[in-house]
Amino acid sequence: MKAVIKSLIDKAVEEILKESGLEAELPEYTVEVPNNKDHGDFAANAALKLSKSLRKNPFDIAADIAGRMKHSLIEKCEPVRPGFINFFISKTFYTDLLRDCISSDSPFMSDMGGGRKAMVEFVSANPTGPLHIGHGRNAAYGDSLARILKAAGFEVMTEYYVNDAGKQMSNLGKSIYVRYLQVCGQDVEFPEDGYKGDYITDIAKELHKIHGGKLLSMNEAEALNIAFEYGLEDIRGGIEADLKEFRVTFQRWFSEKSLYESGEVEECLTELRTLGHVYDSEGAVWFASTKFGDDKDRVVKRQNGEYTYFASDIAYHRNKFRRGVRTSIDVWGADHHGYVKRLASAVYSLGIEDFDFNVSLIQMVNLIKDGERASMSTRAGEFITLKWLIDEIGVDAARFFYLMRDFEAQFDFDIDLAKKRTSDNPVYYVQYAHARVYGLYSKAAEQGLEWEKGANLHLLELDEEKEIIRKLYELKGIVETAAFHRQPHRVIYYLQELASMFHSYYYNNVIINPESPELSGARLSLCAGVAAAVRFGLDLLGVSAPERM
Image (cartoon, rainbow, N blue to C red; front, side, top):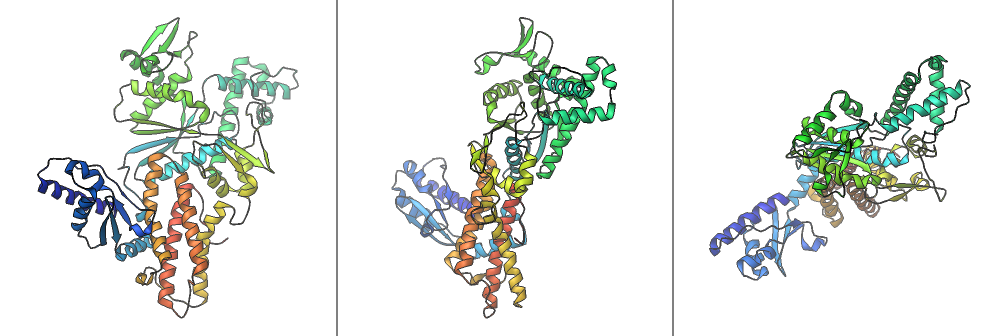
């Protein structure tokens, strides 16, 4: 409907400009849903934007535009001071919308993305240990954002970038190998920079079950590689299993090591050198990042011949573009904020056109249990796993709570609240709106009420009913806004508002009255529309919509 109104205004403005003899450009203006329902269903500020060009009072311009509005769906159009135009939409528009909501998800979907290929690369935690609750927020956010982008018309790819090369991987192999030696009865000192969690000892014990003492007779490099490869596969498998339980799957697990094995890292640096952005100095290879606003140039290949993470990260994003990705969204922890500009500069220094590089920096999550905050350290082995959280409160509550706040804000995850089965718990409150509708279906069947979805909608005349239908209309816009700003929490805010409106409507009105079967059917249809919107919104969050609670 916004598009219809905008096209009508554009046509009216073009006529006004032509009649005035002025050659002014069509101004940028907005068509919004006003907060005050007395101001209509939509309001436009086009007249205010035209005032300077036409040298006329904006109210007079608004009156002129309003007088030209002719459309079957516009019941009334009125100018208001200082120069807004309020549009009152006919009931037909809303009843048709409600019918569409009941029959399919199409009213909530958007073509904003135009089929543009977007990749969301998220979690990508170093496979040095199990996922902890901090990774859980990253996982919930990335997966939900991918779902929202798809609903907004993008062709979406999801990927986990496996950091299976570099110093941290070397430390992992060394940690497992030393624990293996200890399992074999050898008195060896554990490395200071090793990973100390009990899971390392468990992996070493499993390694011993498979190989016995065979690694003791091997040269250290060979034994370390076996320990590393076994540990990497074990930890990666555990990560994948935890994510799958968390309703997160990836189209691809991309190996960092593969970039070296295929020669892409060296190929990428050669390309950057040709472009004049890479040079040799002090025995190392450098990227000239100061040319792009960085405070110093960055090493991409050390004096000892080892590549830095920076080198493979540049090659990885070059690889994304070569696979057809045009919008790349990386989901990182907030502690990587200093790395964003550096990588963005390197990516764009390749001269790639039509490639949007975006980073969402996920802030920390603090776990509150029994009124106290838990602390974590992966290397020290002191952390709360995502698996524990899932077992403690369930997937629905975990995902919903992770997504309740803007990803750029830290928040306290209240375990006790997440476990409550009352309206104080926001996920329960929203899910119950969906279950309540199905409860009404059962009640109608018990009372022998026969009704047809989408019939007699003209009987929905209460202000509450009109407001709920208007709210259903907003969901498509919420999807577009959430996709544009990469903010899944906007969907949660919407669902909480819709659930509140529905619960209030339920308590204040008789939905099922056998003496008024046609009105009851119309109201059940309205409830069906609410259920469809709640179900659609919850699915964007990766949260279930139960029919019974």
